[in-house]
Image (cartoon, rainbow, N blue to C red; front, side, top):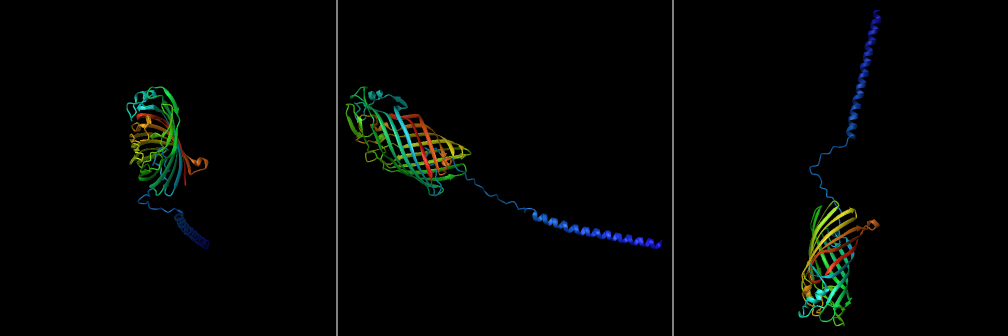
Length: 387
């Protein structure tokens, strides 16, 4: 019995030793596995970067909506880019005004004296003038803030004139339909951006018109005695003025989202009379506009234009007939017009570098140095190609 009990005790001690050894082995295996797991977690975890002291400034570059067709100096080509454009424009004038009041042809020939000899009355009154011009434009971006523009224009003017019979009275004799054609303008201009942020920009421009235009055109007119005379065309019927003019201007424009807007001013200031001894009065043009981009590449525009111009200074001794437009004092005045239009990108037909702008408008106020023929409407479009 004693030997059996001792054997049992030894077996118990051996079993406990085996159990303790197994626990030790299990614990030893668990500890390296836990450390390996921690190391793996450290390797797999993304690196934690310290937050920067100053966040980088991000400037969004947006394509600015185009200005209306009739505004000069708002759109500039990018640096090193060339823009070519052609712009046909049509206009029509009819009806006579003295100030803001319309008057009849019969009233004019019975009451308005001839400025050369006030004892005699006028005998010829313009009834309608149709104007068609074609302008070529080349623009180039010298830098991000400076561009140059060169323009050249030709113009055709068609006149319908009513001649009254004899030295006095209101009996119509007949009508004449003369016309003129020639170089109207040649200008060079520079546009410089003086301020810009993501919404607003301000640009100034300065240009010169050169005395290359034709101002000695002639046409045939029916005279009060029934004869036809070949005369130098009236001042307003000449293709150009033949003077050297300075063209200063400034533009403010802004845009936010789909909306765009702006204000502009540009003047045309003749510096001296032409060789025929006359020049047009100083002209000042003001514009305000708003635009809305319907979809990228299609912008609609609305523009208000106000123009004021002085009378002609001097006179051409070959423009002296007894017609309303021979009087230098019957030029200039004030006019307010409303224009609607738009600009469409050529990307819709696969021509990303091309665009077409169009605009048409009517006068809503005219106060003219007159009697003077009044403006009825104006319309035009411009085809542009970026190179």
